[in-house]
Image (tube, rainbow, N blue to C red; front, side, top):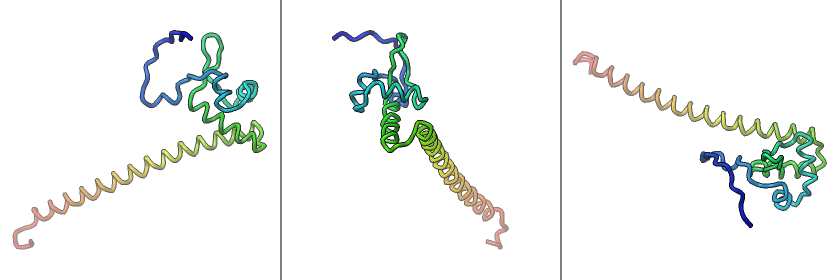
Length: 134
C-alpha cells in the first residue's frame, strides 16, 4: 500500500496530540463505534474533526479523547446538550487549574523575592549604623 504524499507542516512539540491523523474508519475501529455515530456526534456539535481537501474527516489524539468521553456520557444517558455542557465545564476546569498553578508559582516567586529584598535591606541597615550601635 502506497502512502500519499502529505504537505509539509512544521511541528512544535506541543501540537502532536492536536494533529489530525486518523480517518473515520480508523477511529471507528479504535473506539468500537460505527462511523454513523461519529458523524452524529459531529452533527450535534460535540466535535469538529479536521477535513482534508476531499472532505474526509481526520481526527487527532485529542479528538479521540473527547470521543471517548462523549461515548461514555452518551452511554450513561446524557443527551447532546448535556454532553456539550459537561465537556465545556471540564475544559474550563483544566484552564482554571492551570491558572491556579501559575498564580501559586508567581506567589512563591514573589515571596522568595520579598525574603531576598528583606535580607538585603537588613544587611544595608547593619552597614549604615554608626560603629557604637552595632
